Image 1 (cartoon, rainbow, N blue to C red):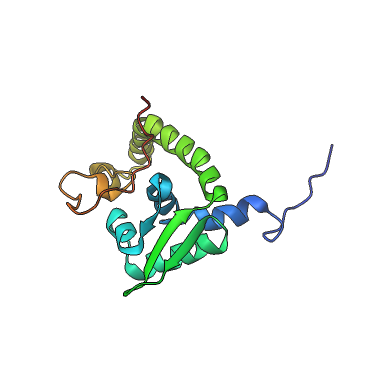
Image 2: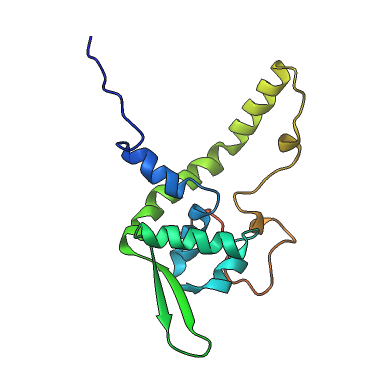
Length: 159
């Protein structure tokens, strides 16, 4: 029988990448930037629920990892735009595949959770009573009129 070697935290490329993109906000920021560059406040309005501080930290981390580029245009006040890099654009393929999978399998997962909770004697937990969207900004009544994009991971309709 073959002995498998143990992968440490530092040696695991999957953990390293998932640590960055597996947080609450990074995938949503990448999804919003898929249509092109945005200024900071446009991004903040497009990702419902993200604080200014959290958006700043997320953008810095994405920039550090080479997924997002920051461009400063000298003006008063300075104009700062964020866009996906070539590497960031390649991340869209797996993100959108995951979004497609999640959308397709959401009812199955919801049913499995309800069955599990019922069998475990937990009853219906609050998370099963409220239907959560992939992005809160897609819920009716929460979209902001001044936001041109929302952080939804639904695949674009093809023409």
